[in-house]
Image (cartoon, rainbow, N blue to C red; front, side, top):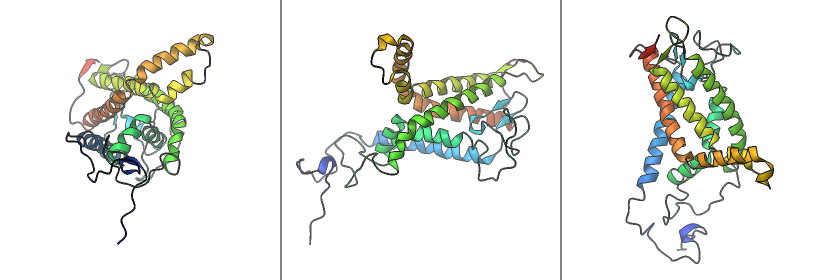
Length: 272
């Protein structure tokens, strides 16, 4: 019987020490990738369900609109939630009401440099952890389909800027009182905090860092871009934390609006 082909990459590549065990590590190396997988799964399941149920996403009294339904520009949207008008007719149930933004936001997150690291290690196990053998014999990186599409991240970044601006507009409109005019409640705190953190996550992106200071040969000749680059670079060191924090604030914002819109709870009002 012929011996199985040996991997040509990773810890079992020719020239490396021949260790039959997957790893000699004795620590809980599997815990971080497991928690990462569970965390991403919770968000994907929650966001998918909420994006398609089409219920409790708009609070007409205070003009609260969940980010999972923004922008809402079809005739299927409930009255008042179409901040930018009605551009399309009724949509079938298999199309989310925020179909203009969700695919691009999904692409932005999937191609994000941090998320690549997260799901490469946790889901694709390439590799799961340092000194742990990969489960596959060959690895081509991001040189072939579908992973070569990861290079489109910079373009998703531009669209993410537009969506962040739309979310900001939604947050401003949400300062609406129950009797008209200016109003302020707990929902405004949650929505505004989410928007601020989304902006921080977006502009801390590596693509933003490249846009602000990439390809500059002399920073001294571009003082404004240099200042922007240094600011983005400092924020970039928190990109991982912001990536996870914004997943949490997106779910929290949607969940709170859902509770208020469904009448489960009342919004805590500070003004009007």
